[in-house]
Length: 233
Length: 178
Image (cartoon, helix red, strand yellow):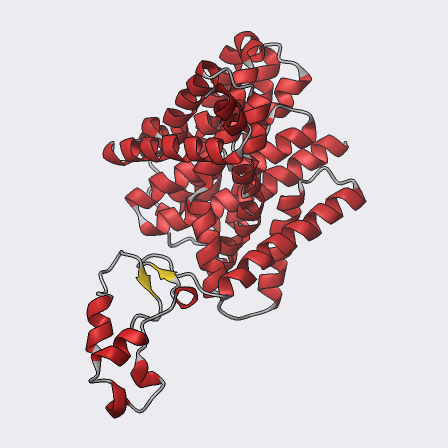
């Protein structure tokens, strides 16, 4: 029995099965909550999986090694972000100037504000590098955090928090600012809250959702460029 | 035809063999075999021929090409990243490469659209293992947790407001009617 367990503990079979099962359960709960941002499957699944690792005394590196296949898919998924941009090229081209200006302003605000506040709290360089890419989609944020010397796991969670919060405040905040154009509303949600903002925007309006997707993909590129520039300087 | 069709009823959303509709009649003149149940039964789809197909996502050979395209772009991006020493992640360089390639070569690419949409739709499950990595960051969280959460919330709010206001302002200048 123990021997069997020890053999299985070192296999992707066990950990992929456990991860997918837990995620599927979390996803069903999330669906039942009508996709409320606070019920995001990752938010529900992560604590459960952490508890399972603690209960079975599995060291995290063993788990990470055996679920590396899932993480690998983040690479091609990041490359695939080019596809929605390309599909919506006509929309992007029509408002290219204002779009890029807003993108630059939003991206810069995101980086400066988050690093500024953490710095004011006395965060180390490692923490600054972790939070700097907080407004971009998770795979890019993790890659950037790693590149800049941050902690990818923490970056993933920071991005998650930003997404949940962004999706929750999008409608009240944009109403308070009296923004009526759905292109503007969607784009702002996508730039500030990546996939969460995009999902939220699609719930409200089709055009808004499309612009949120554009904002998310463009911001991934812009933040990567700005942070690269920052790292080089 | 009817024989095989009854063996493989096409229920939307269920897995059905891709060649369920293909019968003996396609290989022989229909009149010779189509009425003979034995022939229909003998020519039912063999295992390698039955490809799972579902309402949402049909799996077909062009998908290999689409996946290969994504991986090739990432590979080239990673190569550029390693050779040039640019701190830009390889996958992000790959994204630019793919965008450039798509813009340079016109044409519809339904399969690439489908595959990348599928990947994007399932991003969440892909970063679960990374999020579980928090298990090792206890000390960092205890020390910086509050700062990180405060900064993240404030920055999200600011970013959304700034982006929206700048976009509206710039749009109003270029499209006076809006």
